[in-house]
Image 1 (cartoon, helix red, strand yellow):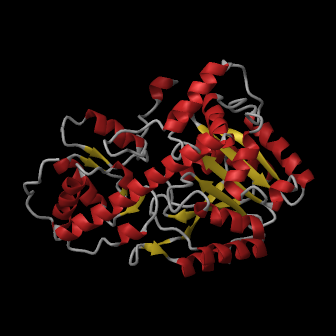
Image 2 (tube, rainbow, N blue to C red):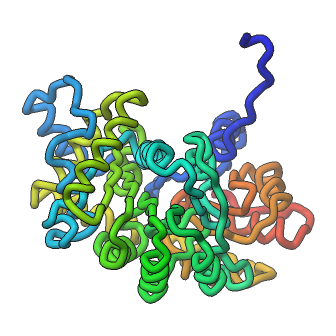
Image 3 (tube, one colour):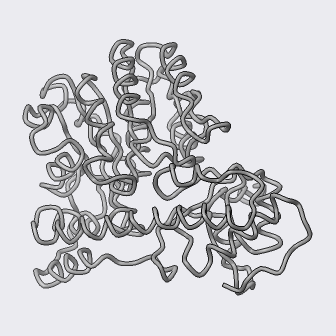
Amino acid sequence: MFDRLDPAPADSILGLTEAFKRDPNPRKVNLAVGVYKDAQGRTPVLAAVREAERRLLAEGEDKSYLPIDGLPGLGSQVQTLLFGARHPACREGRAVTTQTPGGTGALRVAADFLARIAPEATVWLSRPTWPNHPNIFQAAGLRVDVYPYFDPATHGVDFQALLDAVAQIPSGDVLVLHGCCHNPTGADLTREQWTAVAQMAAERGILPLVDFAYQGFAQGLEEDAQGIRILADHCPEMMVASSFSKNFGLYNERAGALTLIAETDRAAAIAQGHVKRVVRPNYSNPPAHGARVVYTVLRDPQLRALWEEEVREMRDRIHAMRHLLAESLHELGAPRDFSFIVRQRGMFSYTGLTPEQVRRLRERYAIYAVSSGRINVAGLTQATVEYVAQAMVDVLTQGIPQDIPAS
């Protein structure tokens, strides 16, 4: 059976990381994978996480199974992070949370849940979106379609086209939105635009499903949740897939959550029962350690304050790299205006580079980016940003490779 298989294509992003690891060029730069790097180019373990782990070890963290829906108490902490401490959906028991293996796991649980309760629904994804989104929903057997989102001319949201498209989505379909730091474009909705989308979704009976992977990386933990809270104020039902990979740095611990809001507490409890039904034959129950770290940090005022400061520092570094890259491109004579990089939010920027230009970046300079032109700004450092900027100028002008300052 296995001998008849053709080779499977490499993942469009993780495959680049494997190629990056094999590249012998000492000046190589990985701007493809969505992992935060510090000023030294390392993925840090946060001080709040280290302290939480120290406490868990001292307390004798056990290795027993968690319940199907995850660590008791984590759900209320996640809901407070999403909606605030006093949101009516939380006070009235209309919000329920299931711990999942990362944000991807939350999306897949949501997809399996939707395939169980609404197999005829179409899932609408932004164009463009994270490349794994269609894989997740199609693997669950759901239909996938797209709505316009990005305007290449402005490097921002083509909001009128988006709203016109949402106005045509049938009742009962699912609208996938990025809570903040849109992946791959870095272009986010404004508060007014969130309100218009929420009103339209409520009018048409569309179910919002928010992928919330970067809370705290755009403007702040509270500010980044404004879209979710606006949706919760307008829509009787919604879902949110949370990830703690980025804002806690828990990439390999697979800590995430799926939160569901229903119209009544009874409907929420019944819906969570169905969510647990799709979890059980999949991974049975989620991993414990990352969830315990998140829970320990969020419920302890001292650790929570330390974590919030560390999130702010990560956000500020990303903003600084955006400014520095845009300034370097301008000073080096880039043939187009890259000031939009400063206006975009989060780790990613849709640079406008073509697949051919991305290929030349990789082959000439060992700079790895996704073929769409998306780069991870958080992968830049003070030592590499000028090297990357000069290489971008070169491939844009299609000139002879230049002598580029050593990083």
